[in-house]
Each structure stands twice: as C-alpha cells, then as structure tokens.
Amino acid sequence: MKNGFLPRTARLETVDERIRDNHLFTFRVDKELGVAPGQFVELSVPGIGAFPVSSCAYLTGTALICCIRRAGRVTDALYRLAPGARIGVRGPFGAGFPLEAFYGRDALLVAGGLGMAPLRALLQALLSQRERFGEIILLYGSRDPESLLFREELETLGRSGAVQVRFSVDFATEFPWTTKSFFCRVGLVTSLLEKLALTPGRTTAAVCGPPALYGCVLEELARLGIPAEAIFATLERRMRCGVGECCHCVTSGVFVCCEGPVFSLARLRQLPEAI
Amino acid sequence: MFCRTCPDDFGDRLLQALAVDHQVLGAQQGSDGVCRIAPLHRWGDLSRESLPLLPAKKLVLPPQETLWTLAGDDYLPPETPRPVALLGVFSCDLFALDYLDRAFADDSLYRSRRAPFFLVGTPCVPGEACFCPSSSAPPSFDLFVDNGRVWAGSTRGKELLQVFAGLLGTAEDAELPKPAHGERRFPPGEDLARLHRESAADPLWSETARRCLSCGACSAVCPTCACFDVVDTVAGEEVRRRRQWDNCFFYSHALVAGGHNFRPTRKERLRFRFEHKLLGFGALRGVVSCVGCGRCRRNCPVDIDISEVLQSLVEREGS
Image 1 (cartoon, chains in turn blue, cyan):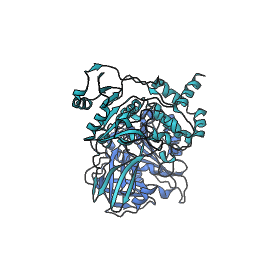
Image 2 (tube, rainbow over the protein chains, first blue to last red):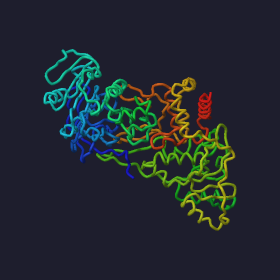
Image 3 (cartoon, each protein chain N blue to C red):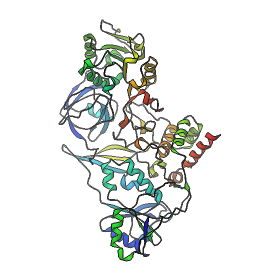
Image 4 (cartoon, rainbow over the protein chains, first blue to last red):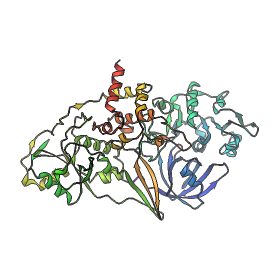
C-alpha cells in the first residue's frame, strides 16, 4: 500500500500575470499526471501548506496548468515563488466531468468567475473531438470585463464559430460590447439563458461557479427541459486529504473529494446540503 | 468461541511475553484522577472500571503524525513505528477500532501502526452514561482475558497462547463474557436516515446548539471521530508535513479560501457530528459509529448526550 500523502515534485515554469490575483501557473512534472477535466490535484508549497485546485487545460502532457486565485495563505506563498521553484503535487483526485455524457449532444457550459478554469479544460476536451458534439455554447459571467479569464482566447473561439460564446458582467467600466460572434451584457450569467436557442432534450450542461450560482442556475436549466441526469456541477469544498478520510468536504454524508467534485443534478437532489 | 483456563498470574506473564517486541500500554488510573493509556508494567495496574479519557485511536491515529519530511528534492515517508501491545481494552473500544479499520482501510500510515498492534481485551465495569452497541459478532481482538480464562481471536493470539501451552487448560467452547450492561439498539439505518433528514428544521438542533460551546471535547474523546487537518512546520532547514486531529465543531472545519463556510452555524456543525455518529460517511454510510462508550456525555461541559438527543428525535417523530 502506498503512502498517498507523499507528493511528487513539480517545478514552476511560467506565470501569466495578466489577470490580477488570478494568475495562470504552468508547472512541470516528470511524469504525466493525467488530470481529467473537473478532477483536482493538491498543490503543496512545502513549509506553508496545500490546497486543492483543478486543471484548466486538457491533455497537457507533463505540464500542469492551473488558474489560481490568490485567496489564502498558501496561494499567497505560491504567488511569491519565482519560476524554477519546486512545489509538491498529489493527485489527480475525484471524478471529473463525464465526457461520454456529451457525446452526440449539444454542450452548454455555464461558468461564473473562477469557475471558468475547470470549464476551460472541459471546453478544450470537447474541442479536441469537435465532430462528436453538436452545438457548444459557453455562458460566462464575471464581475467586470477586466476579470474575465481567458477573454482573448474565448473571443477568438467565439469568432471562429466553433463555440457560441456569451459573456455577462456584473459591472462594466468599459462599455459592454457586442460583435457578430459574441456578446456581453451587464447582469447575472442567468440572464444569458434568456433568448438562448437550446434543444434541451439534446443538451448536456456543465456548470461551475461560486455557491450562489448553483442555487439559481441548476434548477433553471432543469426547468428549461435539460434532464437532471445531463446537468453537471462541480462542488467546491475544503479538501485536506483528497482520499475520503479527513471529513472536511463531507456533504450530506458524501465525500465530495471521492464521489465528486462533479455531480449530476439528479445526484445533487439527493444531497440536500450540497447546494 | 474457544477459550482456555489460565493461571492467576497469566496477565503478567502475557505482559512480559509481549514486552519482548512491543511497547506495552494499558489504561491506568493516574494520581491526578485521569484514566489514561500509558506504559504498563503490571497487569494489576490496569483500570478495571474507567475507560481511558482518550481512546486507542490516539495510538493508531496520533494527535500529530508526520506524513513526510522534505530532504532536498525528496519527500521522505515517516519511519515505521514500533509495534504496540494495548492491554485491558473494553469491548466498546474494540468495536471502535473495528470501525476505524474500515474507515482507514486504504491508509498506509494507519495500517503501519494498526497491523502490528496487539490487542488484549478485558471485560468492563459499565460506567456512567455508557451502553453497549448491539452487534451480532464480537469485536476483533488478539486475546481476551477474563477471570481465569483466555480467548484467542486471531492467528497471532493463538500463536502467542502456544508459548503458554503448559499453563493453560484444555480448550472449551464458551461465549465471550457478556457486558454487565444491557445492550442498546439503535433504530434501523433507514429510520436513522429519515430522522436525520426530516429533522433538519427541528428546533431540537438549535436548542441543543444553544447549549453547545463548540469546544469539541466530544469529538476529541470519541473513539471513532477521526477527522484531521494537514499542516506544515518548518524547523531550521527541515520542512515537515503532518496531519493532526481536527474537530468538526470548529468554525474553520468547512471554511474555504475566499471566506465561504459550508457549515457556518453551531447548529449545522452539531448536526454534522451526529450525522457521522449515527449514519456514517461515504462507503460507511449506514454504519453507526457510536459505540456507546459515553465519553462524549461525560466530558461535555453542558451535558449534551447523543443518546438523549436521538431519543428526543424518535419521540418527536411519534408525537
């Protein structure tokens, strides 16, 4: 039996600092981790601590690419590391988005804030086999235009026609923009669901965002007619071990780190404390 | 189950035999009035009446346990701990170890302590606020010693008895001594699940939580409460990660970076702990982890009693 708490060494390679306090980190490991979209790893800054984070990219070989918010003690320490620094990584852990649930169907991705990070990995997975899916729609809400993650990349994707991209922002210091292929409005991401041309019975949805987003979006998608088995959300919880022991992430009796963090709405309805 | 008669001084002989390759421990009443697990030198020093304040979980899941130390680029696992023999364990604590064995079945560090652990059970004198869980099978042990008789519950136990073959009587079929206390049955799993689910808005939780001080004493002394936090320490050049006992009554237990707390109120944290005791988590959902030792009740500064709370839930449902 192996000691599941021993990390592997990863080296910090590059940091994309374009979005303030939401830097994009690329780490290099000696052997591919194989993090599926929605799964998470535990990153360690030795001497400080560890935190769970999902990958924001798909099939990255020996690279591990994570969009990490500066939100606490450990991420703060990570932000002070220089390229070349060694950190620890354990995982991947948990169950990610089931790609097979999207095969032959339209995909609707709904992201709020930093929730765009794991959904970008899913989006890349879908695009890597684009012909297996119908429409791909991304609805992405953020606080303001400056905090939209991967904005240029997503705009380009929207223009290419491979993905329908719709942005929303809570506040706009620059004027909301609209062009031929994409659209931004001021309001909640749920407002983007209005006037959306969906074929609900043929759609599989993936949602990722702050807890408040789940309270309104998931059942709204079900009301639109998307089957509860085809609506997926990933739950954020305090995860210290990743292996179903430490009990911090337990929600309605379920270890979110093992059975989740991705759950279908059908399953979440059985977990009254999840949303 | 087979048992054999043994001489009066068997306990001390057993202690000596185990001391060759084990650290021998047992619950003993301290001069400060606290019963605790400590190095045992005489069988007669074992506590016959009181359970140790902290149960055997502190040996298999130490309050602080190193997960690794970092040396250069290498994460080094901790050294293999010395085998422990724990003598004079009461049935409830044996049942609790059975539960932890299931919860930590895949944990190599837990296994490294538990696998060589030699357990000698003894009958108890029921204490205040305790009861015995009803179970169809006796708990796991290596040997069980009672009043001139010894039972072997494992291959290791049988092998050790062979050392004493000349001292022991012939094998006879005999049940393990029943606890002097009545067994108390929990409602069936589906009833517990329903009681828990449907009581979410019951004022009983907020009333109990209003008394609760969130001190966490109940979880600390509980033989099946085993949640842990993971923390790093730096001493000079040495970086060490360890896990240490955590407590679901603490505000930070379900707090995530950014400030969202998934169990922000004391009521939610109280109900969460009771959910673990009565219903279990994950693969152990449906397995009651309360073994009736009564430690939580005896150590609660405001006398919250899990079995009373459960009884109230049952009665309220009926009314």
